[in-house]
Image (cartoon, rainbow, N blue to C red; front, side):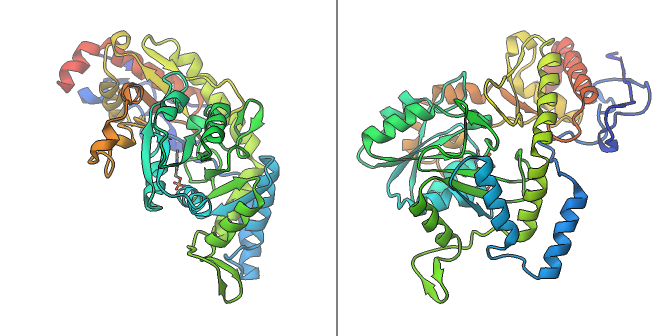
Length: 416
Ligand SMILES: *Cc1c(COP(=O)(O)O)cnc(C)c1O
């Protein structure tokens, strides 16, 4: 039963790793004992790597120079290029995005509470907590998945030091409304732009909004330096403070001006960034193609809808809302069935930061109305994307989902 024919020859892909199982075999769903659709796991955000040869050349020059870190030439070059690309005055590279967020908190001298959405990666909240700040979770808009300014406004009190907006999936988060709120309440505003490299908000590049923005250049992000991140800002004084804090607080030889840390990016990472930046447009084009294929083919399945991008985007995330009534299986049943096929869809950002430690144990975290967050956290799946996810691969993913949906009764029984 449940047979289907697989086409093994993925002619558009030069990528053996993701090839389908052997020629025209008849298969069953993997949860019923069949051979998984893919021999290797399909992951969310498989990295693009630019032109390898260019990276090796940079490494060669680095080895010859013996300059491996401490504000080296690649770090300086990449900072300049990113600032230019994002049309912002300062870019300060860091060892990762979590540290970029913490440096902003430190340099703004924040104390007390910071309002942020719960529907984000846990690092957004953890960065605040590590700085001795109290994260206060606000709700989101279920259409944009981004911070709801009304919900944010309700949580402002005399202890509020700042708002931390997140440009989820690379979509700008009500920047204008948040700027107004921050100005009227005389509090700081900064952004977690980890998803938003190369994205725009109302035709302006993300990177120059609020007091500062934090990027992540982790391997799974649209633009990567293996591990890495950056603070971008138009504020000269803030940029200066962040640069000092990044390097233990040194402002000169033998002179430390405050409680700094080591948040520097090494040259190997900056060299990767320079190599990836050369190819960034190409990467975005490939991401867009992948996203378009998902839009087109997943559209054929009742019960799944792909979030579309309306502004300039890096198209890194394929975000899908699952309607279990229409699809016949729940989001979690679909996930388990797909994982058995080596299609590793992810439940980003389930269950929401407020439902994880250390926040869940605090009675107060759960008093806020986060109904939209709770609702959305039950419905979303992020699909495999990035390098090597060709049209053929996507069609095969969609075929597999069709089979799962057609066999919804058997699938539900299997997991019950
Ligand atoms: C990846 C990510 C971070 C953390 O960045 P790192 O570079 O991994 O420290 C923070 N916030 C969001 C929304 C992210 O997706």
